Length: 222
Image: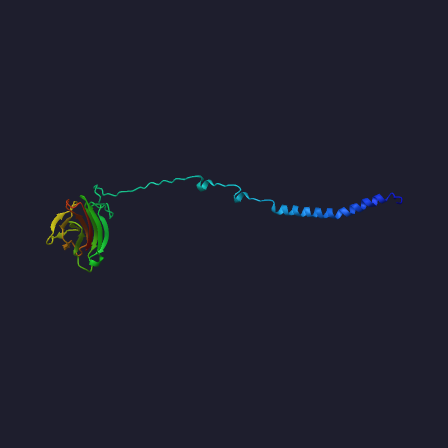
């Protein structure tokens, strides 16, 4: 055995270190790689919006809203207290409140029609102004009703001459106008002063008390 030099122990140490370094590096690399894998799959991420937390909306189920509504109904009845309302041209129960049918000529085609209901002791009144022209004055009324009714025509002109036709009876209106009444259709021929027979015509419709409610359709011409 020869004499050991002073630097030889140093070489032994270096050799041992060089031998250990690769294995240590591999081991470290391997550990680091699994740490990365654990980091990618070992962490569970949860979102509070997907079940992690429960959100309750007070507008959906949390609050119960109860709505109540009331049903209102209206009952229409006539002024006489019977369940027989008249939606046509009311109030026209008197001569002074007669429904104005306007101005028509003595040609029959310029006449018209009125619809109404008689309830209780109701009377319906109509008026028009008739002008004597190229046709014939023959003031006429006819009525279709679901009960018994009477129709009267009253003429207002200067120096009236009037003869009630057959099946009619003479009558005077509440305001003193001369006329004729019947339960049947009828025409009135009359004379006024002067050449023309221009006149105001008043029509009244009434019924017996035994018929509490009667609907009618009136046709008229001058």
